[in-house]
Length: 432
Image (cartoon, rainbow, N blue to C red; front, side, top):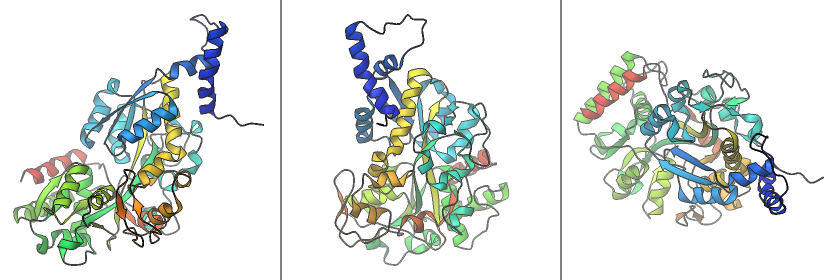
């Protein structure tokens, strides 16, 4: 028996609907339930409006999704804070929220996200356990990591609930599709020494040549990793600091700033790439694809691992509470398309990991999989999705394999109980 997928049914329905229309058959009155053929013909008229942080707001992804799915996608890249604000305060201005898991304690209480029925996601059982149970392998540091780990905000207690569940349910907040282990990046041709610890961001050797990420929920975690590694303070829980801890870490940051340790504070991917590629900064908070982008310009750039471990982050796509009918069907089609593999392979060539890696593997060449996921020496030249060479034969990915990198995540980007106070103290630091 031939297996007919839901997508094939819809795509096939387009032709069937056209045939029926031509024959004058299948006519319905406005009060009758709409047939699958009717929906199939209508889906091509659907437009889904995305808001997101820009990581996956890429024209090549939009074009491929439109080609495969048959409807229109509009993408609006925003900064992290602006993305969250729009999701909360302007729910009629978007259909799909592309955001990070640490944003969910802010966004979910608004009720603007429609819980995702995981039974409608064909390959949900292939999602890596980092998102579902939080357990990657036995005794992995990530299993007990601090902060807003995806597992803590992945599921809701029910369709009408805005309360996070402690264990998997049928209702997901976001459908995950990308994540990574972040650390410091540096210019090996300019630092003149081996970088092995977060503490080196405060090394006087690099005075005036370091930079820090200026997004409070992320920057504060990097600052915590640095101050703890330098022995300047300790935390009960870096992912949920007390007011006293926020006061202390802010004072340290302001002291470092006034002593001239920092050259810049960046908010966007491109800013971090330009700072490093120009040599204006030689050591900074960095995202893996930004390192790849610097390397793509022919400039040396290196990335962790550091002795204290990584800071993790994860992103996914959520559905507006306002979607229904054919628009909701189209949204679920997109979520299934995300998990199918092409998107994971595309983003994997920039250094991100796929939430369904066994599907992404089907779209990657053996040498790409060996380099990006297995941490093996590149069997041949490695090229990014835009055709730029980023690694030569024999090169090894910084940090090694997927298990070595993601398994050593010790904290995640975080929203804390004292979030308003955190933002206030961070702004004091940036303004000092």
